[in-house]
Length: 111
Image (cartoon, rainbow, N blue to C red; front, side):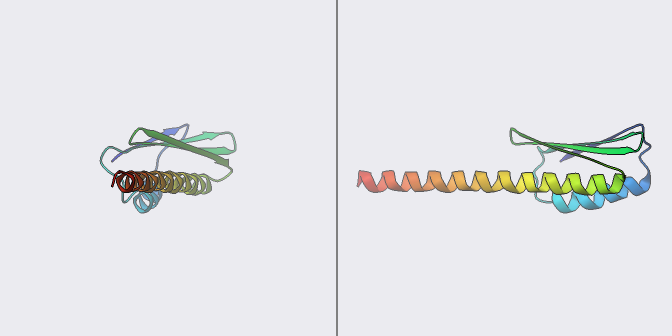
């Protein structure tokens, strides 16, 4: 799994990196090696913007958030991407189950 953290108009301190590492390791613990995660942190005047893009198995998921506090932005954008990942995983499992039923019906019909 590849992680890329970019800070625009902000210096990435050890505290920010540590916070990201803790949160990311919890969310992305079961991802494979082909997963690419890009996190962009930006400060514009009094706005703190966090964007995250996850590319895995041909699927690109994106989430972004803007608040007055950087840590709040990071937490909320990670919650959003976690919901996206769960939704995608559930849909993929439903498709696999549906295909399984279809093949089972075909086997029964051929008998």
